Image (cartoon, rainbow, N blue to C red; front, top):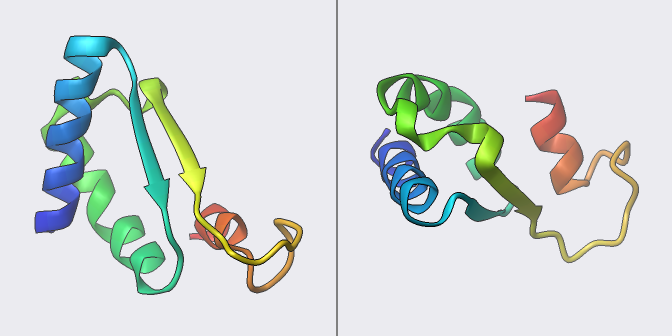
Length: 78
């Protein structure tokens, strides 16, 4: 929950000052943690506006999104 709050606070500040928030997302346990904790944190911080986010999936493997080991794919199904 603390990480999700930190992300939303940084997003709200970035959106307010520059109009966009960029976030690099790794895989592993972070996927389930953010899938669970980020929605309530976003509801509590309307200024974080996810439509203004630029997400980058940090994945050392070159695999299609449908591949079981794809970081982007893991976020899509969570």
